[in-house]
Length: 321
Ligand code: CP
Ligand code: NVA
Image 1 (cartoon, rainbow, N blue to C red):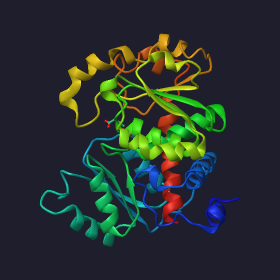
Image 2 (image 1 turned 120 degrees about the vertical axis):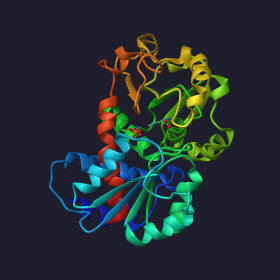
Image 3 (image 1 turned 90 degrees about the vertical axis):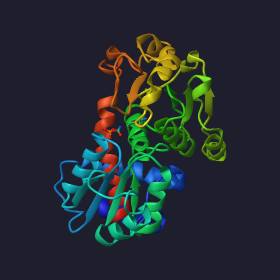
Image 4 (image 1 turned 30 degrees about the vertical axis):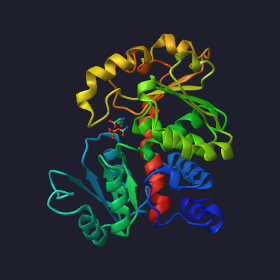
């Protein structure tokens, strides 16, 4: 079946065309599963030359730096005939001399879709509310949904269906990557543990929102400060100890998170020789992960990075065709 046919027969006639992606909380488990399966098809057909985005334009707004997210959006869209336009805060008046709402209204008249990476979730929400075109969250302080999709794809490539697999996030339990993994795990039935010092526990409100989702999918969600809980894990995941915008907290975080580094001892504590290591990247080797682990045989961080492109292309295809 071609991707066009897949999209037409998708979700029993309920299309995702025109939808934004601000957080996976806005999607049903069936819709997430659809985009995940579409990502696999996109990856299988990655060498096909297509022009599915011909005549379309994508604004890429960046308040924060990026390698993977920017390159994934730009290449996934541009290779298929679309015209991506990169705009940093050095280029445009995003909430400075012009309100976010007005910028959104103008961009919505010129672009088929908008990607935003920056600080506040409320900015990406305002762009979606006022632009009238699909808006994709390419990372905010609160969520990083396109990353979480690539992470689940990587988990499934290694272990088959993600449902019932044990994924442990070890590190800053309140950051955007941990929060997005929490949501997608609750939606898809992944047994997800956040292993973090008490001071960095995830927002109780988000945990509460995820509770009924986890009940429906059968996911178990746990938060603890005990590293022994990695026992039996299929995958250990970490992220930087200091996220973008939190640079002043470096020393405090180093002190808190030092015992939570993913090194070979922690990988071995899973008791699983086939356990994999995941990291959204960029990594600070020697802080959240030992170089021997991220560069070693259990690491899937580089597949994960490649999967950003396939999953982002699938999101664009599902919402723009
Ligand atoms: N993982 C990720 O979002 O990487 P970039 O910050 O390079 O986009
Ligand atoms: N938590 C990190 C993720 C980077 C992809 C940050 O926000 O900087």
